[in-house]
Length: 133
Image (tube, rainbow, N blue to C red):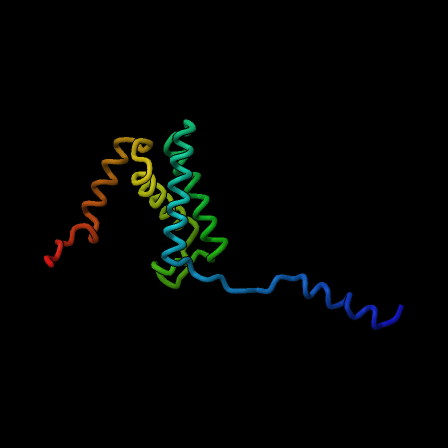
């Protein structure tokens, strides 16, 4: 077999191996999208009769795995350090609950809606007095 024929075959595996790239942190826009996706999943699941805790858990796990896989667990709004999968789960579940409370409040149990409303009232972003124009 001529050597000129073997050269392309030896290089081919190198071309097929994906390049190692550092994952970019999840941006604020991406996190907003992921939160919306999680919330919509909760709303759809609830409409299909799935218990709230299970619906939120599945949506949260999906987003946590997405952030872990696509962004190595790094969220730009939080910092440069990767978050543990447990921290990603907790945050993603919280985001799914808040999003569902906004998108489909009738699908969120009353006690959870009360907690969400209390959390929003206590949030620094909402407790700042409005500045007169």
